[in-house]
Length: 389
Length: 218
Ligand code: SF4
Ligand code: SF4
Ligand code: SF4
Image (cartoon, rainbow over all chains, first blue to last red; front, side, top):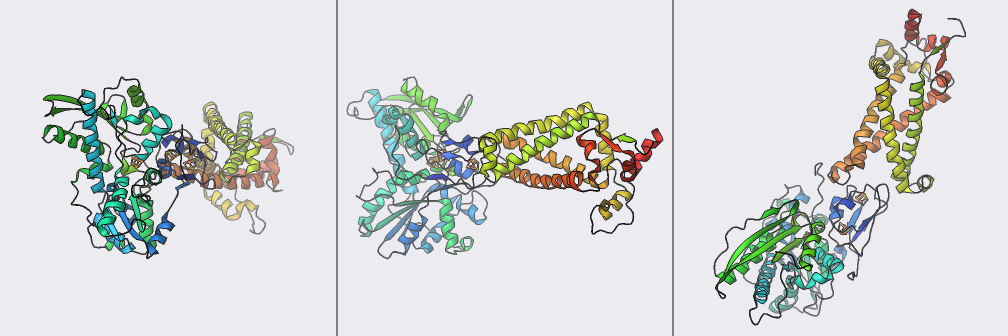
């Protein structure tokens, strides 16, 4: 089975490709064909649009589909009300494109630049990430109740629950392991939650016709471009997120418009509802979603705050970490051990999925992120030119 | 030594080594140029770019192993070669100034006496050794570590490999012109390509210092 993609996101330019074959080693799904010396090509049925090949191509031969022109048109269109959301991992990478140290948090300058670019409302995705975490945490509780045979939760899905915020992982599961889908959380990713809220709740609050609202998202991720085009994401009757641009594209736009980014004064994001809990700031790194959702579930079930979770590496398999959290469930009067697991890199998830499908998995909650180290190293982030791996 | 006497300049092993290097160098240059610039007819000579790359890489193995074996079995001869080419004297600088009298528009009264290899050959030998080492050092990660090294490092290796190859190709073309085409210098052609011998009187003229040491031994 293969998912339907309306547009292919990632492309190799054969006139630039040197056939060095580096990209095949970073592709998590073996979607790139070609041997050393040969022009490489992407099999889009297998590609999950993660962009890892793009940021790792030594010759810049790989690019992603860009909607920057459409966005500039929307910004210049007086009939469009353009709102933008920025993901947590963008603010710590954008500065690199302006010669700042990697990791510098340029949140304030970024919001200022977005206003100068002409966006009508400038939001932080962090707030929607909180919603995703609440959803995932609550869903986990329901699945645990269902597993424990508590009446009223029969409709909840099976355990273990997989996270759902990485669109590369979702496409991979759909393509390779359709039977695992009931295990994946039904929560929308923060990007899509935000998009849906923007064109429903925010549109109403701002008194803007959703038909005129143009919703943009800045992501560290190329797979999010694919996610926003999925046909199910039309909460208001219009596309929840109209276009996604990457951290790199935002930097290009700022440069194109001649904004002196380094000397901008810090500004704050516009507020949609209240403020963020800050739980989502760790969304950009692996283990971030898992930890935040687990904390939420813990608090809801026990009424207490969860201490530090000690994850340990699973022997032999480096990018897999696991932990056990004992949750005292107030309502049931028992303490339930919840085994959690974090996997980054789709290459390493197959064994875990096969264990789940065969009924021998010990885990209850599994976070899967495609990119090494999480979204902070996503395919939409600035391209580094370090000489060491 | 009479007027028709000959001197043995290059041993059988040296000549075999030179032939082997010549053939693999042509293969390496052709395949490299073919897939670097997407020249289809060259790639198709080898059955497409993927196969051209296989030919390139295995030729490179011969390119490394050939000289390595030669050096192991002829260590003394190789040391003497390195000794000669690294010994750059006033006469060698004099040769460079006059370009050995091979260039028509450089007026030359007298070319200073030369060793077994003239200053041009010494420079060429040195540059070829350095160039080959650079090709090997950069080619190895490009092939074997292509999946594990950082993209920036891989691009760096490709750049060094590319520019070194351009310099080597130009040097070899210059060498080919002097050794096989230029009427004054091609007199030694058969010494490397066929039987190893050069006429004694030519040696006496072109490699006076070396000839003198041969005379002493005699
Ligand atoms: S990494 Fe880039 S240049 Fe190398 S084979 Fe892949 S697309 Fe071509
Ligand atoms: S985008 Fe990701 S899945 Fe697609 S070819 Fe590149 S590395 Fe492979
Ligand atoms: S890990 Fe993050 S950046 Fe990478 S594909 Fe998934 S959502 Fe995108």
